[in-house]
Image (cartoon, rainbow, N blue to C red; front, side):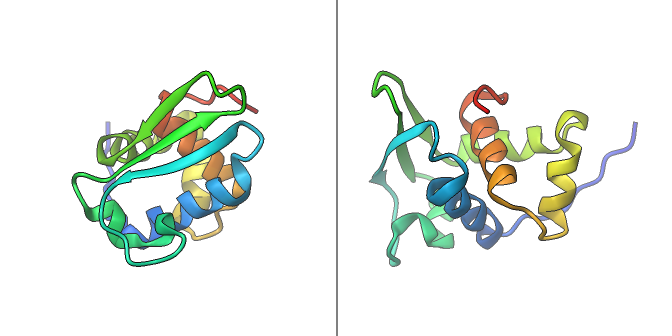
Length: 120
């Protein structure tokens, strides 16, 4: 087996989160709430430095307001790892070539939170 590693910038992560929160995941997300982590931008989730803060936490609530999930550094790492799997190769290629879109962002966020694509 071969392993390919490529650094992912905080800016690239922020761009995926922006695309997910502002379009790609709107069909299943109701609320997004900043719990902790330093941010100097508005909206807070657009700040790449937020994702570098080891204590950042964003709470996400679904449309039924029954389920809540936490987005943190551990979830971001899991999402990136899973995005690199064969099952999501098209989205990984789009992400790495900076050709990602709302669909790629939605898949990434779901991989971060659920470990799989469960909506859409």
